[in-house]
Image (cartoon, rainbow, N blue to C red; front, side, top):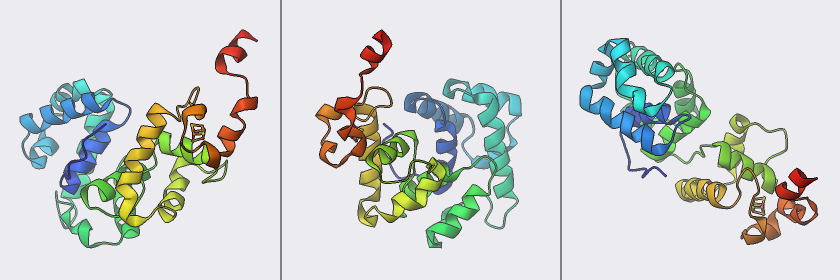
Length: 211
Ligand code: SF4
């Protein structure tokens, strides 16, 4: 799991873009290589595209992430505040989210990560683990997408425990409420969980496979 040391908001944004669909280790390796090669964001913006792809190669999907990062930086460079998102600290979460999600390739989860991790705003980033757990626990309706779950889960989480809840839910999703074969019998939330309550009547994956 990423350490979640507080980074500057633009650093966090680019790191989060790099983290999409890759492991934390590969993401941090690619980010470190990029910062070493191009110390300033202006340098990343001006890097030859093919060279940036090579630098980001260890992070996976470099052919998509390099142009996305340069598109984000180009958009910001053309904005009044330039390559600095520090001004977001003075914004409310909703307009800050709207600004970030208007950037190329930036979705609600990425924007929420920037606001929570870098700026300490009480918003819940909903990744695949948190979305799955919320569905199983009945915290959101069965047709609610991960995107739509962001404001709903933010609203029911105590603001001063948002980061802690986010990190614990991800850990819960990785270790216990796994996508396949959740360990409901070992889960501290079993008494509260409609999905877990039906676990005893569901065939296990092994039984289903055998059947
Ligand atoms: S009881 Fe099972 S489904 Fe419910 S939260 Fe725990 S592991 Fe997930």
